[in-house]
Image (cartoon, rainbow, N blue to C red; front, side, top):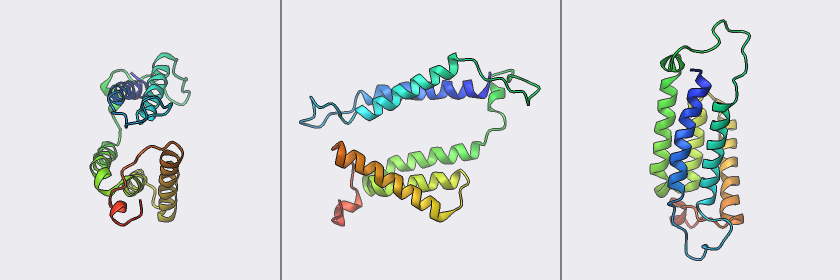
Length: 163
């Protein structure tokens, strides 16, 4: 089984679980009839992941001319040669992000998560990492809080009067 098909199976499973959990997100009072609710984005992300992974599984894989062996022969062969250390560290970053989201708040924990992810993936240009981490986080925060009126945890910024 090819690596792209194995990856698609993993993304499909995660998207289904994420979508099931998204339907259990409680709605804030007063948004019952609104078009955009706190569960709208997670449901859309889950649906996108499901559709994309199903397309990867169903559509034929592109032919690779530069390789002698077209497909890996077994499921376990698809996992050989992967950077498990990087994957484990990214997993730990995600767990840390989930644990720090409430105490540190969305802005700080997301900036730290993105910065750590860039570092893990091999980026070493500090200015670029900070610029992209801060820019993406503040832009996403603005869209969610100011345009869509979705509450995001302020964390320590609340105590500093900056929420």
